[in-house]
Length: 119
Image (cartoon, rainbow, N blue to C red):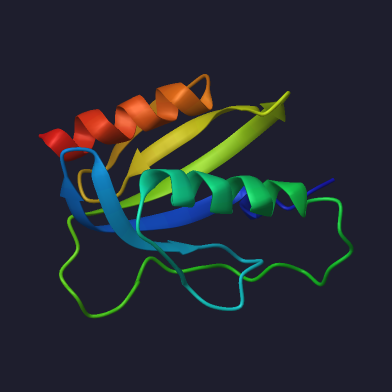
C-alpha cells in the first residue's frame, strides 16, 4: 500500500501567458523544488514521479505549498488517484480559491489548468 501523499504534488504557477506556464513542482520524493518552464515539462516531472512508486524508499515527508518568496499566480494540489496506460484520474485542488475539480485523464487535467489560469 502506498502512502496517500505519494501521489500528490504541489504545483505553484508563477507565470501563465497564452498556455505557457512556469513555476515549481514539489513532491515528497524530490529533494528540492523542481522548476519547470512549460506545461509539458510539469507533466513529464509528474509522470516520472509516478514511475518511482514501486521503488523502495523511506517514509515520505509531508510537503508545504511554498515555492519561494516570489509572487505566484496560483497554487494547486494535484492528486493522482489512478494511473492506467499512461492516463491519470484524480483531483485538482486550487488552493487559492479552495476549489476542487475532478479529472478523468491527463488531457482533462491540462484543460482544467488552462481554464483556471485563463480566468
